[in-house]
Amino acid sequence: MSAAPIAPVALAEIAEIVERMRGAHPASARLIVGLAGAPGAGKSTVAAALAARLPGAVVLPMDGFHLPQAELVRLGRRERMGAPDTFDIDAFVALLKHLRSVAGSGTTVLAPGFDRRVEEPVPGAIKLLPERRTVIVEGNYLLLRKGRWQRVAPLLDLSVGVVLDEATRHDRLIARHIAFGKTPDAARAWALGPDERNAAAIAATLEHADHFLAAR
Image (cartoon, rainbow, N blue to C red; front, side, top):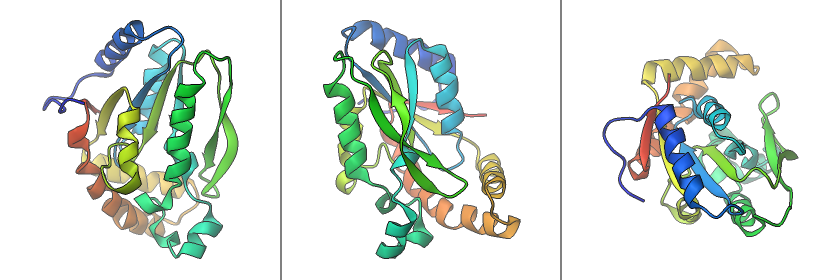
């Protein structure tokens, strides 16, 4: 992958780049586009907007690969939920590889979703239909080059770093935590504590993105 340019590009430009890559790919092959960014940066919104511009595209959030709450408690990682070692990275990598291997075979692939109300993965919640040959993966650590996460970036055909000004990102993140059940004080403490530590680690990885996109 090439180094990311200094100036962010617009969503329409990313869509055009993906369309050109899609045209250069074999018709039956899957194109995997990764959107990486900090918590609250707007990855889900950008992913949905990009998919809406691309016929045959589907969004695959990385959130479904959070370890279950019971497993986080067992491992002593519950208070760090969202950190790199609180995801099932092996299952995530296996799914990305599987998506490529069954492309063109007519196989529907099931992926886990995530219920933010209870903060639990939901097995088989997302259906990746065979005709959906452009997969937009959005997640925090797609470009992390440490440990087992370094296996993810080579599976992406294109990577985009999603960035947002810090004040807006914090405000939206706190509001999201409140919307899903945290008290205002708890939401702020989590957003400026565990989430912010993760955001710092993620920011250091975005230099590896092919492009930057400034969310709004």
